[in-house]
Image (cartoon, rainbow, N blue to C red; front, side, top):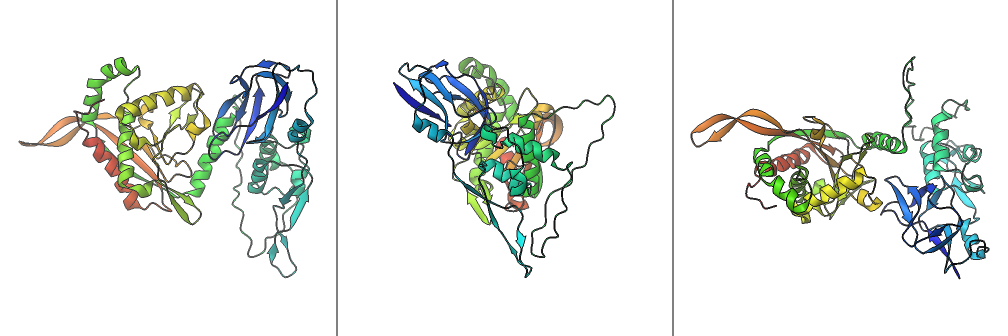
Amino acid sequence: MALVELIMPKMGESIMEATVLTWLKKEGDTIEQDESVLEVATDKVDTEVPSTHAGVLKEILAKDGEVIEVGKPIAIIATDGDDAGAPAAPKAEAKAEPKTEVKVEAAQPAAASNGAVHSTPVTSDRFYSPLVKNIAKEEGIPLSELDSLPGSGKDGRVTKTDIIAYVETRGSQPVAAPAAPAPEAKPSTAVAKIPASINAGDEIIEMDRMRKMIAQRMVDSKRIAPHVTSFVEADVTNIVFWRNRNKNEFKKREGGNLTFTPIFIHAVAKAIKDYPMINVQVDGDRIIKKKDINIGMAVALPSGNLIVPVIRNADQLNLTGLANKVNDLAIRARDNKLSPDELSGGTFTISNVGSFGNVMGTPIIMQPQVGILALGAIVKKPAVIETPNGDAIAIRHKMFLSHSYDHRVVDGSLGGMVVRRVADYLERFDMDTDI
């Protein structure tokens, strides 16, 4: 007989906690090793958590909607056929709900008699997860107000859902007018919400969780990074002819479609190697130059939302490897079968707006990256070309490339040269390339 803890697994390099969505098993159920036990949600993806042991689900420690830190126990599993009715081990109970005093700094500073502003630490016996405290800090919710918020989590704990719902309705509640800030206080960056007009016959659609995250990230990116976009038109006639010549053989051999996306990613990876300062991230006053070239590709989901799986070390893959990787990630993204690691760690992103019939776009940067490339539709156009007998007009396959970049660290010269180099690689594509 043995009792083992099922802990919240690590979901990715930057993910420190996850929200329990729903339990797929109930207490007393028999579970197999690696069988999915519950669904959890992170800032990046919804995923299932498998059991680390076979046995009986003895006790559920984390309720639906509760935010749990990585490494914390979420359930007790009785192995070796232990009876589900036996009492849980005292050690497991102790770990299930630690009783520690948490110190939280007040969101609003107190002004001293001499006019200087000082932070006054305030303690609270109530537990708040790091995510809840961060949201409260960003929204300017003081500790006294947070303490009055009812929670739906375990033992009345405030969950992410509770505080987000409170923030959405907070503006409609009467609040005391805040004291005027001292001269040195940082001004608020909050933007007043303009209510929408609703008329008879209008349909009201609630945003799902993913759409809310996308909306918040897009707003954050535009607020954080000054966006600039450079455009280049590329002649991709050779690529079109080459793909048409090889797509049937590739599908017969590999079992997947040969799209233009792996060719574009191959060109982008080579351009990043030529201009490594586009493969950076901003950390305060520091620029982090990334060693690996990890390219994210935006994938449209059946729901209409977008998700961005990442091809790691894209510069180390040939066209066949990239094509297979693109097909695999795109299929599993649409089936919601990607792991959190496959959605994190990107250093540059591409978005194929041409798949929707758009000739160009001005994409928004995926933070903390500093560049994103939109690929427009390939369109037949008359163009002037040089021939041994002089200039001539011919039908060519053309497309626009739109490169949005963070003007804090990427100047127009670098941003423009990067997209121009991508176009050069596409236009110089070798028709004898093997696939």
